[in-house]
Image (cartoon, rainbow, N blue to C red):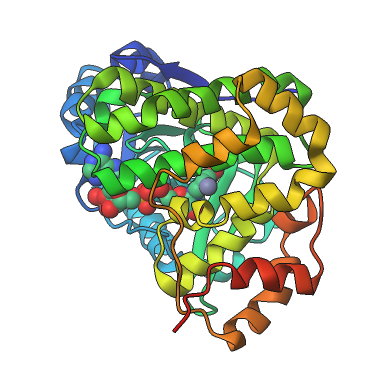
Length: 365
Ligand code: NAP
Ligand code: ZN
C-alpha cells in the first residue's frame, strides 16, 4: 500500500508551477518560518509576488527555532487566529515545517499546549504548503511533526494523516545558501530516513528502488556539494534524495536510529541529522545479522558492498563523541526502549545491547 496525499513539485521554478494550487487554498496565509532562512534562501522574494498575483494577503510568524518547542506552537496559534488567516505556508528546514503542522492542528482543534500530542483530539487540520530550504527531513511529504517539550526536556514526534502538506515545493535553488555543516547534517538525516526504510518492520517493498535511488544520489553528490556549495545539480540531487527519504518514512516510519538521536539533540544540542549519523554504522552492524536479505538486496541495487558503503560514510566527520555520563545512560535506556520508533525496529535491543551502543559514543575523559 502506498499513500501520499501531497502534490509534490520537485523542480527548478516549482513555486511558480504550484501557484494555482496555492491560490485554491485560501485568501490569507500565515507564513511560518525561522530566523532568517526564508529570506536567505530566496523563497520569500519568490513567494510574495505569487501571493500578490493570486490576491492572497499574508502575515508572517518568524518565531520558529531549531527543534521547535510547544510554546512556539501556541504563539503561532494565537497569531493565526488574531490575523484571521485561513491557511499556512511553511518555509524552512524541518523545524518550521513541523511547527506549521502542529499550529495547523492547534488552531483547527483548539488545542492547548498539553493537548498537542493527544492524537484523539486531532480531528481537523488547515491546508498547508511546505517549502523546504534544507535537504534532510522530507517533512514536506510526511505526516509527522517533531516537537520538544522543554518542561520534560523530551523531543518526540507524532503522526497524523491530517498534517500531510497539501502542496510541497522542492526547489534546490532555495538550498544553495545552506552552510557546509547544515548541508552535511541534513543530507545524513535524509540518508537515515532512506536506510530506515530498509530496516523498519513496516518496510514497503514498492519503495526499495526509490530508497536505492535516494541513497545513490547522496553517495554520488554529497562530497561534490560540500566542495562546491553553489553547484546546483548536486543540490538538486540531494533535494530529490531528501524528498525520497520523506516518502520512505511516511510509509515505514523511523526506527531505533532516530530514537537514539533525539536525546542527544536535547541534552547536547547535536543537530538532528548528526545525532542520527553518529550511530549510523553501529545501527547497521547491529541490525545486519537479522537483515541479511534486505541489506544484500540494497547493496546489490547500490552496486557496492556494505564495507564500501561504511568506508564512504566514514569519510565524513560524523563520528562524534560526547561526555555522556553513566547516569544519563541509565536514564535514557528505558526511555529509548519505550519509544514507538524502537518497537518497529527489526531487532529490539535489550538493555545491555543498548548500553553498549550508547557507550560507543562516550568520550573517554
Ligand atoms: P532546521 O532545524 O529547520 O534548521 C537548521 C538551521 O538551518 C537553522 O539555523 C536554519 O535557519 C538554517 N537554515 C535552513 N535553511 C537554510 C537555508 N536555505 N540557508 C541558510 N540557513 C538555513 O533543520 P532541519 O535539519 O531541516 O530540521 C530538523 C528538524 O526536523 C528536527 O526538529 C527534526 O526532528 C525534524 N524532523 C522532522 C521530520 C518529519 O518527518 N517531520 C523528519 C526528520 C526530522 P533559520 O532559523 O533561519 O530557519
Ligand atoms: Zn530525521
